[in-house]
Image (tube, rainbow, N blue to C red; front, side):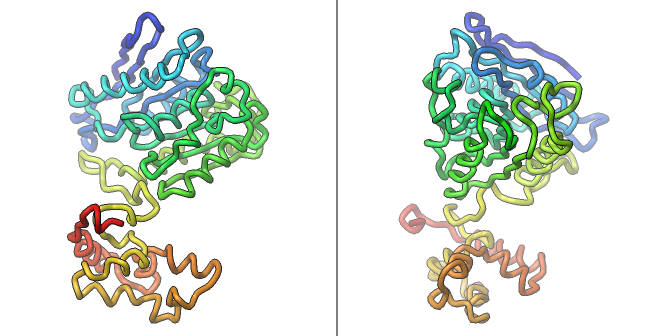
Length: 347
């Protein structure tokens, strides 16, 4: 393992700590690693140590090349300096991706409190959107959060759109510093888009619990709080792949809940979407679109919640329901993906 400390901006005391592990050799299943960029909290007045190295090491243990960004704080925490610090760090990591054994397209951010606000901003507005964002007890709504309002920071919730990075959220119900409505409103905004997200709200944990381990936390928490670390790691495996024969395998799930907005068709499109593009399909695929109709669930006949289900159910889910094998689904998917659409056809 190699430790590096790189000064990004001497005047603003911005620096990047890198915790780098080997690839290849004895790491026979690892030719490259995903990267995690940790953004500690501290109210934009400081960068908390308990939300820095302990977090980076947890992800390093899971196989990541881990980085800690101590971004502009205090008198230098003038927006958009912190976001620019993040973008400078990502540029540096990508420049050294080959040397450091990193997938340049698999950089994840993990942020806490103010650092979680910054992580959310990277997910919704940065020119270098992370592959995913893990956001802990963060003032992502800002409205009503005096700590953040005083610094005239943007509200990430206002920028959530279809291009937002997948997000993993965690917080505590009894957090009185950054109230839980921040997390709840942010996940509701994500739910209104096509973006994949996962959220964990613990009954007790207050604010600033970091990894939840006794060696780092200074607040009383419920016993399940430390679970967020492993849950986030498993979630990341699902959306960006796990270590295999030297390379990360294919993701089990996508970054969007369906493929309806993609420039191609797939079994992860909704049946409703595929029906609107039926004229583009191979004739052998058309019968699969009638699965719901054959069960008396034509969209035109449905009302209320069932109508929403019929409109939003993915073809893959219905194929599995009627017993189509994984091999056959893969064959159907391959045929569908040959269908590429123009911008006009996407509408």
